[in-house]
Amino acid sequence: MKTKKIYWKNIDQLDSNNQMIKNIHENEFVSKLPVNQNDNIFIGKGVAKVEWGGQCDDNVGIGSGVMSTGALNDAHGNVALGYAAMKTLTQIDNNVAIGSGCLGSNTTGTSNTSVGTGALNANTTADSNTAVGYLALVTSTTAARNTAVGHGALDSVTTGGNNTG
Image 1 (cartoon, rainbow, N blue to C red):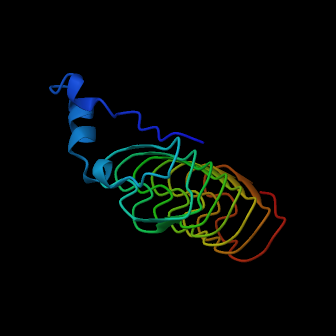
Image 2: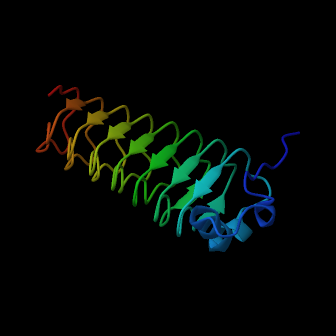
């Protein structure tokens, strides 16, 4: 049987003058983590402040508003770093979002990688995209299996698939 792991469980023993530690301690989410969730790490104001359903394991969210408006329902192996990254996720697996607003509208798309402010921000359900660069694939909503590298790469693709730019 897996055990519950909360990495800031003994937060009161740490230096309360450290601002990052103070923010973690005061975060409303800490007291709302369901018991049956394992190996999740969340740091930031309002992070993962959502309804939880199903088993959600191995997720990392760091930044204000990360994973904050969807409903974590059977979400596994996601990493979101940056303001409002992966904000609306629900039932998704194996996504990486590094940068403000990356994968911000993603609800059920899996196996996406976005690096750079706004990369794949409009993606909702598409799978297997790679967007690296400021606003790369920014308007893509349901386009799958695309690779975009560079500032604004493939920024006009919305629903197509298998593009490289």
